Image (cartoon, rainbow, N blue to C red; front, side, top):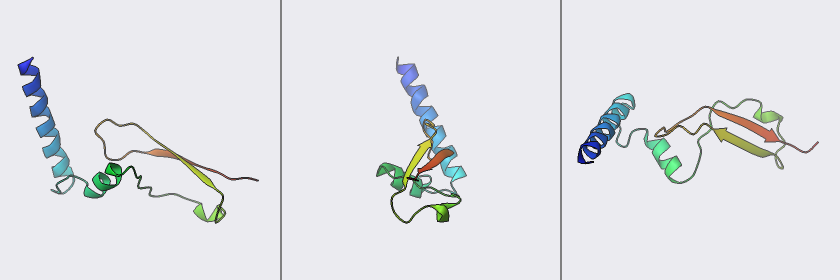
Length: 83
């Protein structure tokens, strides 16, 4: 058991170093993602045709992929509007 715990700690450290390297050395890696996700918020980018939605009354449904340990994900975004 102790060997598994040590291997898990090493893997977590390796993953943290890799994320920092990919995130330009920020700590925490991807600080905006860390802040948003830590507060149950999503950051949505590159959405199209938002001008076609009414100013009020639309319901937006976002379904990101559940990527374990990830800080971002492609998402399927739908708008439900009464006709």
